[in-house]
Amino acid sequence: MYIKEAQIQIGKSQYLLLAKSVTSLGSDLINTEVNCALDFEKTPTVKIFGFSWENCGKPDDPAVLKTLTLSPDPITVPGDLKASASGNTTVELAAPLAVNVTLEKEVAGFWVKVPCVEEIGSCHYADGCDLLNQLIPPGQDCPEPLHTYGIPCHCPFKAGMYTLPESDFYLPDIDLPYWLTNGHYRVQGVLGAMGKELGCLKITFAVHSNN
Image 1 (cartoon, one colour):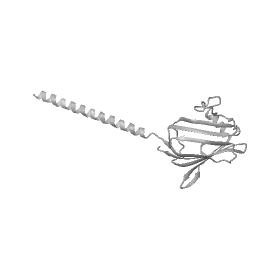
Image 2 (tube, helix red, strand yellow):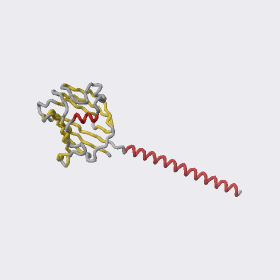
Image 3 (cartoon, helix red, strand yellow):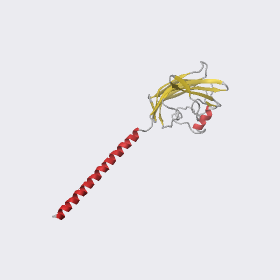
Image 4 (cartoon, helix red, strand yellow):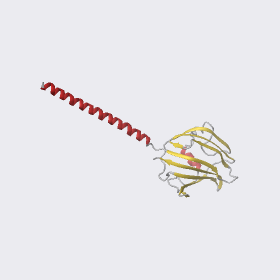
């Protein structure tokens, strides 16, 4: 009789231990799934919205952007982008091609110039053609869809009209500079050669990051 009661007690203890282990394992699995979901939701993303542009050069500037369309709005990085553009130049654009960039951020209703930090910001680039060569080594085919539509990616750019039909792009994840915080920005880029202005483009946009 006592032996049977002892066996029953041992059986109950083993059952309770097993039940507790299963419950603990289930709880751990649920917590793991919740944490993974939260980590996924915390994936850094950058949203660019309110994008607009305009030519800001002189009426007789030889290089002019005719059209530029980006979608969706907002643009999400990383994410997909549709873009189309067209432009015209009445002169050949050849090295050295100076580029002056002015970047400003709206602070308390005033536009404040962002200094040039590590080649980003309000910077002067002595030769934009050299920058293109650094991005895409000479002799290498231009990336798609430029290659398909015969749009060059190296200097010189011959005089004429250039058109990029609506095309799909993927914007990879990027690390924003520490000073590029949420807010409204405007950028002005002036293209020049031998002391003469060739074209000017102004862009405005806003940035929001969840990082």
